[in-house]
Length: 277
Image 1 (cartoon, one colour):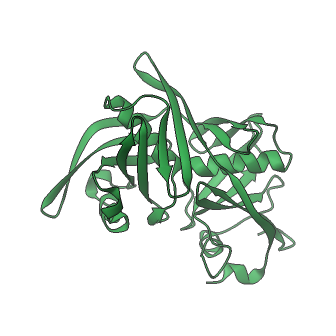
Image 2 (cartoon, rainbow, N blue to C red):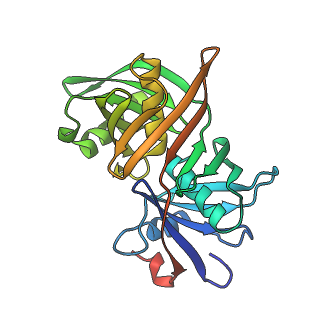
């Protein structure tokens, strides 16, 4: 924790994916995994899908994004979290409308739109597998796999509303095919040309979330690589619309962008009881 025990925070929502953001440019905030888990616990504390620290970058960029899932474990990247921290950096004067920043997965750029939405450049995806088949009990599940900063498994379905996302997502997330780190799981259903509904089970959160930026990015790119969509691909999440832009150059997917809302919900100071379950 900070030396004076006063932790200022801002609560933000990126398409319903909610985060606790803190300015740690002075490097004084030191939180344990258990403290982060406590802060992210709904009803007992601030509550969030994750916690993000805005820190100095040692390589000349505007800042470094340190992201933790709500289980207290640090993760490589979060697309909606990346858009939220970009808006946070702009609003706090740490960056201008166009910025560059580093996260654990690499370099990103972001742009704040006039309406407050954020367009975030993602890393180039890798480790694409067009068709992965896994056995769950007596049935087989088929989907595409890709890493968009974190690993994602994408499954097309015909009745998205009927999918038991938490139950099925958990089974797939911990399947031996994705060991040892596991995977995020996305279920998608086509509603129009280049428009899909999406629901995501997030690793680390260990539940369905209202939106997942890296998941939508993974879904859009796997659809394109499977010959089923072109850029931009739009995804209806429970928290609003996400748009995925990308290009293909010499058989490499590049210039990947994720665009959607990044809303400031509240700000305040964390009390000592917020660290207790």
